[in-house]
Image 1 (cartoon, rainbow, N blue to C red):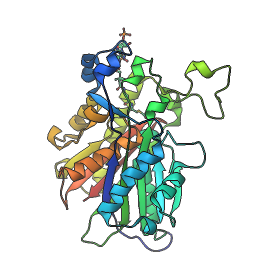
Image 2 (cartoon, rainbow, N blue to C red):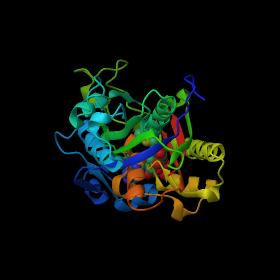
Image 3 (tube, helix red, strand yellow):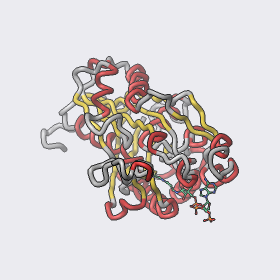
Length: 333
Ligand code: ACO
C-alpha cells in the first residue's frame, strides 16, 4: 500500500512507435568502414537501422510515437497528466525533451521531465509512473523511450557504429478496473562501479567539448562490448526471474518476452536461461539495431499491434544498459 492509503491497479491503455524513413543497411556501412553484412549479422543479428533526417530531433520522434499511443488509448493530449521521456540523446541538455514533447503534442496540463538510464530508461519510467498512478498522485501517464543515437556515434569506429539506430516508442499508463490489464511487478537495478564500460565521455560538465578537444570524438558512444555482454545476460536473467516470481507466475505462463534489442546472442542466451521457447521472444533488432531507451518501447508496440499477445496474456519486458542499469516488468495485458 502507498503512503496515501490507495493502491490503484495500473494498466497499459495504448502503445505507439515511430522510426525515421531513412534505412542504413549493413552493406551501406561496409562502404564507410571495414566491416561486412556477414560480420554484423552473425555477431549481432542486425541487418539495418533507421537514421533520423536532418532537423528531425529526439522530441519529434517521441511526439510521433506519443500521438499513436494516445490514439490507441483513446486519450486526448490535453488530458495527459504526466510525461516522462527516457533518453540519453535529448534535444538539449536543458530543458528536458519531455517539455518539447508536451508543447508539440499539446499536453498543456502535463507535468513533464526526462530520465537518463540508457537502454533501461523506458522500464524505469514504467516503474516510476506506475507507482505515481497507484498512489493516486496522477490518473494517467505518457511514457516514451526516444533516441537519436546517430548524433552520438563515431561513424569511423566500426566497433560501435554498426550497432545503433534512431527511433521512439511510447505507452499510455492509466488507472484500471480489476477486469482490465495490470502492471503486476517491476524491478530495476544499477551498478555504478561499471560506468566505464559504456559511456559518452564528453559533452557533460566533467569534460565539456572545447576548441582543443573537438576532434577527439568525445561525444560519441564508447563501449567495452565483451564486458557489457557478460553483465547483460546475467542481470537481465535475474531481473526477469524476479518479476516473474513476484507476479506469481512460472516461465510457461509467459506468452511473450520482450527484451532489450541490442544483440541476438544476448537475447538467445536469456531465453535459454529463462526456459522460454524462442517463438515466444519478440525480436525486431534486425530492422532497427539498438535504439537504447526506445528499443523495448518500439518492440512492445510492434508486438502489441502484430498480435504477439492478446488480452489477458502475461508478458515480460526486460532491459539492460549503460550505468550499468537493468530493469524488468511483468504485465497482464
Ligand atoms: N566489423 C568487422 N570486424 C569487427 C567489427 C565490425 N563492425 N567490430 C569489431 N570487429 C573486430 C574486432 O576488431 C575484433 O578483431 P580482432 O580479433 O582482430 O581484435 C573482432 O572483430 C572481435 O571483436 P569483439 O569485440 O571481440 O566482438 P564480439 O564478439 O564481442 O562482438 C559486440 C562485439 C557485438 C559489440 C558484442 O560484444 C556486444 O553485443 N556486446 C554487448 C553490447 C550491448 O549489449 N550493449 C547494450 C547496452 S547499449 C546502451 O546502453 C546504449
